[in-house]
Image 1 (tube, rainbow, N blue to C red):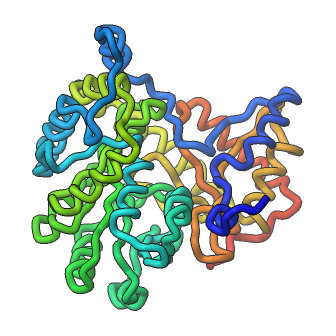
Image 2 (image 1 turned 180 degrees about the vertical axis):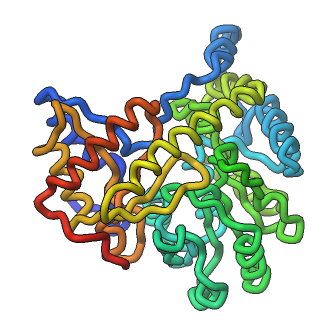
Length: 403
């Protein structure tokens, strides 16, 4: 039987494709510290399940395609607390941030159109673009430069007649980079000059460290008609399995087109919307404590990594990831070796291979992403194991090679 060229061209997830190796290691009795996936261990606010338990209707009916008004109003109030002026009509509830991204691509692009994305980037951007025949054009950033953007001229040189948007995650996954106001101004200028949308993936908005002040693309009224914000409750409230996100934009014509797609998939699950509505009433103290916890974990992880000979990484300023360049021949081979052949007292570490976070062939071969989603005690153990693994790995090289 024949498969489409579209699906054959799609890569498997770099976050999930090594899971069979992990399962085999567990079957042999190894304990694995899972730093490969952004699944927080923070407790979900109890209001989510409480609100669902208290839900009482004779029929669990379809929700409206744009999302329940109570939830959209809660989202609107949340954005206004951040000085982002979204009204109910500017918001459509989606099945996680993933569907919001897919809707943005489908609304803006025809097959063969292009979207500029700073790399390394969230690996599923490749998958979302590939399944609707959109070409990802990478803006390459480097670990040695903190994964910040190159000069404006270098970015502008990538724009073609088929470019439709610039997609940025801020704070970044997998890098933890937070773009400066100057970098955001550069992207805004390019968007206006070349009539592009800016798709702003801001799901880690609360996770900003070291006293930095967060700026959203929603804070830039001069480009309000071309900013599309993608959001989710997954990481903010540690509710990844709820699959509730949204797409938000002040451009009502754009949102009218997105609504067609939302109608085509009918609606987002009713009960999850009930739970998510309750999440938006979570006290700010919850998010403040979560921020402190992640900053502490960031410090634990980064302080250990920077002491490892040959390792190159920039201190992440947001989210809960760090992209690490390793003194190894191949990061994916190293991860597999750690799972199959290496342990310290029956324990080992799992990460996500770096190549899948790039669109440029060959980049990321020596890199992997770590997610600091474990408690500090476990992170200390994991970093000790990683250090020992790097020292023992037969494919070790003298130092990480600049790309």
